[in-house]
Amino acid sequence: MIDSPEFEQFNWMVDMVQNIDMGLIVVDKDFNIQMWNGFMLHHTGKHGSKVKGRSLFQVFPEIQADWFRAKCRPVFELNCRSFIVWQQRAFLFKCRNVRPITGQAEYMYQNITLNPMLNLRSEVQHMFISVSDATSEALSVQS
Image 1 (cartoon, rainbow, N blue to C red):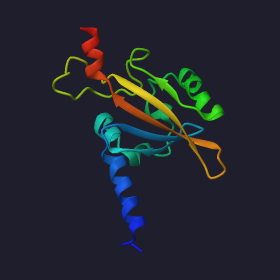
Image 2 (spheres, one colour):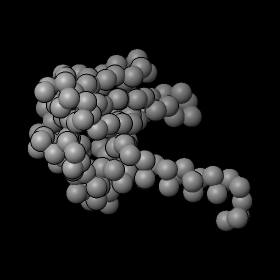
Image 3 (cartoon, one colour):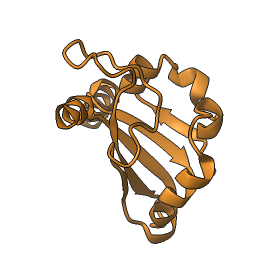
Image 4 (cartoon, rainbow, N blue to C red):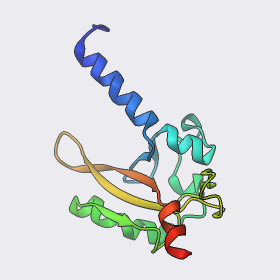
């Protein structure tokens, strides 16, 4: 079973999720963190084993809960994406900027996509949050 093509493909997918140059977080309807990838570990210093099962708002108290819940409402209620761009809010997650070329910013500017995730009954029970580093773009526009 371990040598099956399906297991190998699953292993590849896990490796891609952990190593992609983008933050990936899965939360349930109560905003409890279910999945946390390597990008988020690297940029926040918070290990997945320490954040899984905890509220996103406990792990990141700087997130304004009412505002963020309103941004997520279409995702859970209408099964559609929602977006947060750096021009609207410089960052959602307080990640130190680690790029040497764009080192003028203290924190990473971010573009965020909030994506619905369907269960087997086609109901939205989870949401995955993708975090893209927009620091280079933001600093080039600002200068």
